[in-house]
Length: 264
Image (cartoon, rainbow, N blue to C red; front, side, top):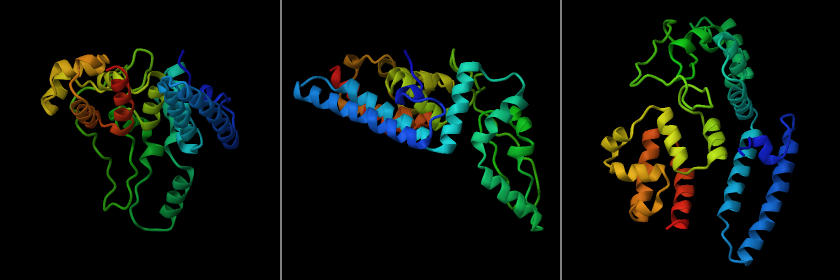
């Protein structure tokens, strides 16, 4: 059964930062004891180490106020879906994307300068921009000669309206969303396939850019480790695939290569 970050730490969504830190220390202490017992018995510690990675990811997200807000909005959209009214959705999402102090500071700056600082599009015009370009976070236009509304950048491919069958999220995944996804399914082949399909990137497309044989791309996504070549090649494949998917390769390489060695 998949658990969210609050479940992983065994806390409620109302937990304070101190509660989160205490829960992390408690859960870590339990895992360390299990790890030592497993090592004394020369048992496989992969599952225990994986739980620690997820525990640490949960803690890192929830102790950061802005990342926690973003995660909570993402979690709510998974559970309840994105509202059909885009204004309602933006009013829910906006607090996690705009730093209140920054917003207030720019408004004060506008009152005391003649420089043509444009109105914050992410506050006043966000719903319209979000409809035009759903794949980018609206930007703040600061100190321009003329106030203009930026045109949406042309997209190489149409964005999927339903990237995952159970997760109505559009546009590239944020770091918080990627960590949430990894906490549910790990950083194995299924993770790579989910991100690739979400971005509408085909295996043929990756093959043309990286020259990785299709059969190895398929083996990576299906975790068919025995069908893959040597460690050096596989590690390079994962790094190149991560670049195409525009995601950090470090956690993926680390976990995937651990799985690779354990099943060879």
